[in-house]
Length: 637
Image (cartoon, rainbow, N blue to C red):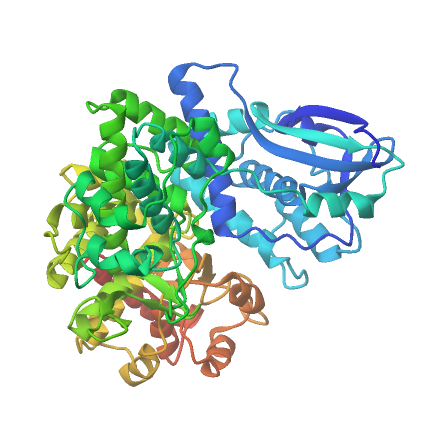
């Protein structure tokens, strides 16, 4: 049996980095956090910092979990669990110190190292010390990627930077757990990897809402709909027992019951007879949607959702309440509790109406929000039922016009990859709000109107949030009709400031124009059009200098009258994946172009435009400046 824990210390980030040294052993995996995990932690810290400031809760702290360690000697700890958090905190401090010239107090060094992982070790120290990239040093690109994500996020939230830094250093807490010296680490890992799953917040919320319903029929109907909606990887109709789908969704499976009584009636024939249960009893034995048997004749398809179920619940609540509700699923239970208290409806009526709204929004989500199909392509499809003895179905485009459907796929995927973090999917909230209030009883929407709305939303984000030094809030942009700036501030198009959305919007605008047959002066159109079909939106988060900052065996592009920002000018930048940027960062344009000749996929249309030119570099500054002005015109269209 494992010995009792030797020591537990509650440490602030400042205290964690002032004392001791922590080592990640060779048997641990590499640093693996991507943009969504890094940005989610940044957002969590910012949310708590702002909440403390607004409510003057001076003693509030944010606990980010535990750091399980084994003490090698006096002040040297081996990290058993928690290396991703510690590494990410090290990256945060590096960005704050070097990009914002902030005072870290008594933190003088990064006290994290790696056993037998020299590249990771050197990259982390180089970033903290502010060492510029060099041709000689190969970086650990996942660590560099997290650094770039952090820098862009804090640039975007610059108005609250001081609050963020103070809260991060002093109020973000981690529990350092030191296991006894005689611990069998192999046995410890076995225990860690076999811990039972805790009841999730959305399951607790389900129990709370069901407890407001007074009869078995209502609770049973509520549970069936909730469980069907909770499986975000398949269309919601397929989560309802096959013999009840016609009753719930109509003969063509495309409509919703018009009230709670109608919902209960449509599901009553398959309801289980139950005695009334207390909230504690419901929580103790939750009904998991995975327990439902699937019809062996059904081909459910393989779809991946752009959002998880707890966050989807918040979207539904925000859409139906039309209130500035945070899209933060960590606060799921508190947010719903607050809204139920503020609602004009009785708790029972709230629960009944919410399950109807949830089902309607989920059907709209299935029909008009993109998914990943078979882990490959983006798709926008509707479940279509065919009249036959076996009531077969398939998946077809959501609009009859294939070209229109593709435009919708492109703009929706543009939004999605621009905002990978769940709490930042305001575009999705806007789309659901539009669909909820404009579709008829059969849930049909005019595809051209939907596309026009999404393009208008892109304009709102562009001019109202990313193109001004005084950005408007997302809620105002979506739920109100604020006056937008009439022009875009091109000063924001610098290497350190330009956001992913800007690059993705530009690529969408280029794709749209090229598909409409437009030609661009001075560009090798044959080169561009040959590669157009290989383009789709992917998760890219690395800003590449097409002509490198530190060119191999060539002279750099410096600041000049023609290019005031030098190599950092927007005309010389594009957005690509970190793996490609890390591999090719110091190569000259000719070498990069040769590399991409072998690729069948295209990451950036702006990059394709740059590669279409025969010449690019310090001898061709006028050409780079002309390209930049052309891209800005497209961006602002």
